[in-house]
Amino acid sequence: MRLLFAAAFGGLMVVAAFSTPVLAWQCMARSTNGAVGMGSGLILERAQKFAIRRCAAAGGNRPGYACSVAYCR
Image 1 (cartoon, rainbow, N blue to C red):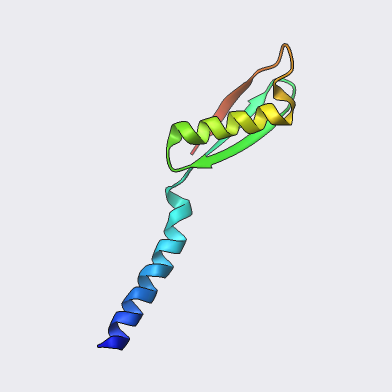
Image 2 (image 1 turned 90 degrees about the vertical axis):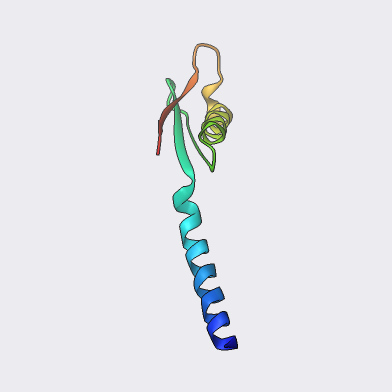
């Protein structure tokens, strides 16, 4: 009985470890000057915010250039 519970628990842990990244949104933001930022999160808005923030940190926040989300999946 213990072996059954241990195997079931181990199996659930493996499934949880491999399924978590699949559930996350991944977004890429680009600037007109070529700066790129990637962001990921469980909520779409949060992934977009991270991508734009990283794009701005990469140099996309200079005058005349703006970062925008290119895609999310």
